[in-house]
Image (cartoon, rainbow, N blue to C red; front, top):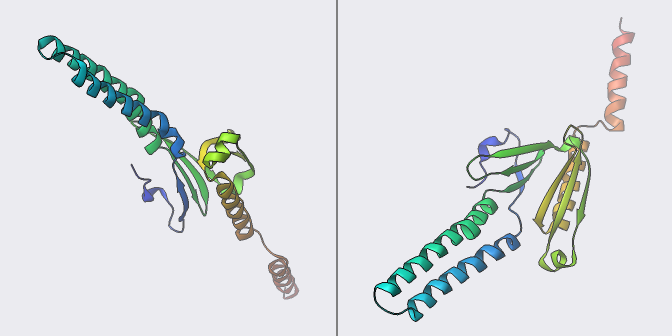
Length: 186
């Protein structure tokens, strides 16, 4: 369930590979603890014999369904959700059985902002919104751990990409001079 490196281009490297913040796992862990406590309580307090065993099996079956639905599934969603920042793009990937991925080239990022509620500030996470040129426009990434650092890293990546793809004054002068020399020789 790790992010596959084979989706990267030859010169591309991962700068950040994030899952949603661990706070997404609080409820699944709570459900798991409650389910185990219910089974243990049933084992301790139900009478011995056939009726007690039927009751314990019923509690166990209900606990198993609730753990699969409210603990295992959210964990799998968390584990298979990736926010990947590379030196060329931002990749947003999700999906347990089927997979969806959105690639945002750094050159298309127009704006990015972050928001945090008081609780998110305490927990060290937040929401990062990336606006890009194209049909979809905005991508909202929720529960980003260390969202301030991630936004700063995104800014640095976008600026680095723009610098890489733009000509400086010295380079522009060299091109203009070589063009003039080319015309003068004809």
